[in-house]
Image (cartoon, rainbow, N blue to C red; front, top):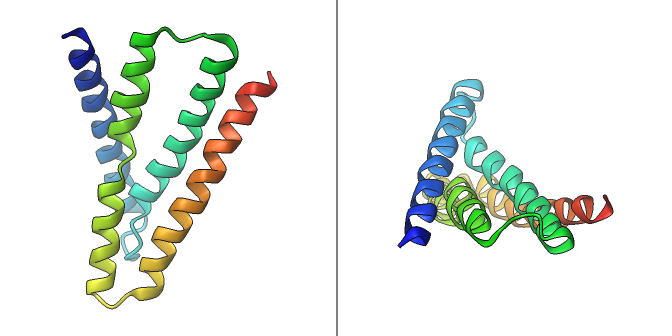
Length: 125
């Protein structure tokens, strides 16, 4: 039962952070169709997951409950693939094909790059 509460609490916080970030970027880049808020959330979340994975593996610095809260809850709520695919479909439906492919391609490529970066940064200390 405690695991469900940890995941739920983390998900609430992560989803709230993602929403705030989306609102911030919709105000900053209001003339852009590109989903900057989700893009930034996924890239920064990838870096954080990589850092935490590297720290956890190398030092066992995070106990299983905190890891569950952070990885599955908070960062799982903060980064979301369903939002990427929905935003990409919206771009496709509005015939913004270059932006649609850029959204998917950059998110996957940079997400992998930043997970690796976070992991190696954590392991190098």
